Amino acid sequence: MLVSDFDYHLPPELIAQAPLPQRSASRMLVLDRA
Image 1 (cartoon, one colour):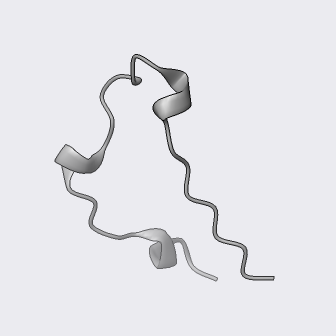
Image 2 (cartoon, one colour; image 1 turned 180 degrees about the vertical axis):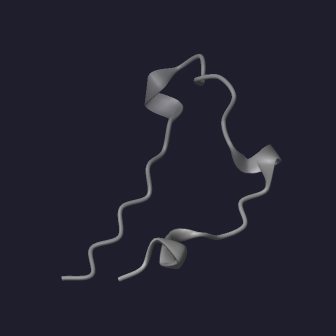
């Protein structure tokens, strides 16, 4: 596995700059490849 395998384009507008006012409104993506 190479470090470059984890290099991908992520547009800045898709990166959260501040938390949501309501924590329960947050989402997290979990990918289980097992």
